[in-house]
Length: 68
Image (cartoon, rainbow, N blue to C red):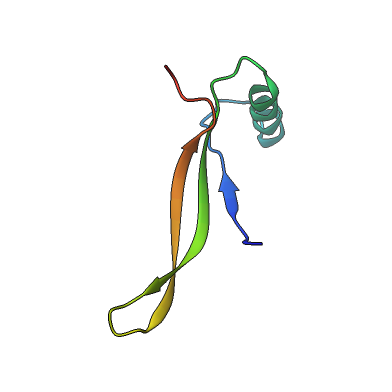
């Protein structure tokens, strides 16, 4: 099984860090939220023409609720 780092970002105005975190959680848990885009980071092995294999960090942006 591979290991991934998944991030979701949002910019918020709030009175405190805790208030910002609570608001972000509320938005994430809202079933009608459009906050469905995540960046997924992972290592990818690349094989060069020489046969040498190297690993690089890469990422995909994934929208779990694509718009129609």
